[in-house]
Every structure is written in C-alpha cells, then in structure tokens.
Length: 141
Image 1 (spheres, rainbow, N blue to C red):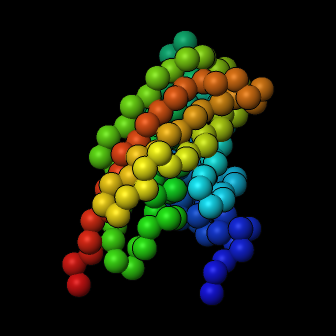
Image 2 (cartoon, rainbow, N blue to C red):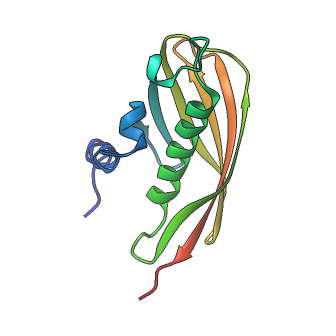
C-alpha cells in the first residue's frame, strides 16, 4: 500500500524526532516524484555570533533534505543510504523568518545519487546553493 502525500510527510517528520533535525526545527513540508522540500526557522538556535543564519546550519538543512530525498526514492528493504560529500555556496544572509530547502536529483543511479539543493528565504531570494552526493549500499542479509 502506498502512502498518501500527507501520510508520507507525517511519517518523514516522525523520523526526525530526537535528532539534529528536531534540534534545528527542520520540517519536511512537501514532496513529489522528483523533489523534497523542508523548512527551518531562522532564530538564535541557528545564528552565528553576529545574529545571522550560520552556514553550518544551512548545510545541515541541505544535507537533511537531500538525504531524506535519497531515502525516499531508494528501496530501503535492500539498501541503506549515506552522504558522501556536501558543498554549499552561501549567497545571502538571513536574520529572521524561515529558510526553505528544495532538493532535486541531478543523477539518480542505483549506487550513487547527486542532488541539487536550493535554499531560499521567505521572499524566495536565493540564500545558498548546495550539492549533496549520496551512496546506496546493500544491506547485509
């Protein structure tokens, strides 16, 4: 039985309980056949010392949404997914509101995946551009 989109979002957010995602307030908000979107509040928990969004928090958001996307589109009965590399280019500072990460696949191979993750603010301004590579490895039976 396939879950509805709403049920999928509920299940994905349950997985994030008691993890870094919960600590940072990351919430999966939308998904489709070829994308996944999450948001994170910009507040003192994710600030760098001068009161703007920390690049490390942005990278954590990007890796979270990208890894979730790889998990969502993999057959987890047979494989487990791990991140290999992440890059982040930060283009704009954010002081408040939310940032949104949209992960889309550039490559969806059996073994390796490459995702493009665009981080935007509440006004749809581009904040960061990230790339995440993941690997699907066989589970030992």
